[in-house]
Image 1 (cartoon, rainbow, N blue to C red):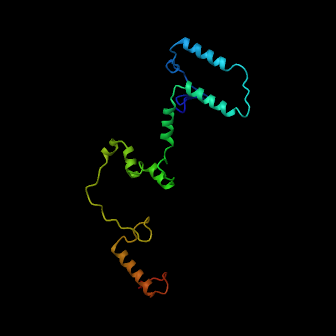
Image 2 (tube, rainbow, N blue to C red):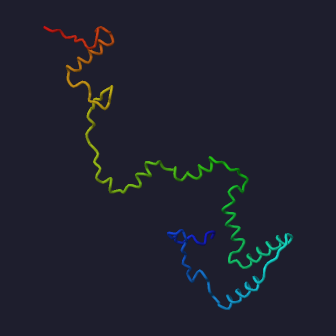
Image 3 (cartoon, one colour):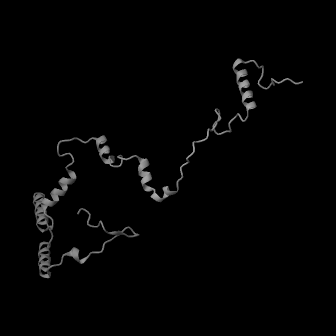
Length: 183
């Protein structure tokens, strides 16, 4: 109702292309259209000279003329305006947080993960196999989880324990000096 060119196509140069259909023109009677044309022609003859005092009267006359010749009734127009602009009719004040909550409430009813999964077609999940066995125990390097586990055998674990014991007790003079004897 507010945008008569809503169905128009936008051209490359930025112009709008709108094809007028015969049903939109509502040509019922050629005589009626001729009479309307003669009335408008008679009303538009000569230059309009309006003084500052008559400005309001001219505006009122134009509005009355538009209201009489309009295919829409003013009641319908007022109903549309009331529906659009009667947000605070009951005396409420604008609240930004409530406005945001009302605007995003439908989209926040479900978590984002469910919405993402809803966009994936069902056949994608048909081939997914779930393991039936328990996960094997995985040893992780406590110092750097991206490196290999530091203990690979029984002897490595004992050497590691001894190294940690020497560090806590500070019994070794230097870490580079071997604790093994040479025979």
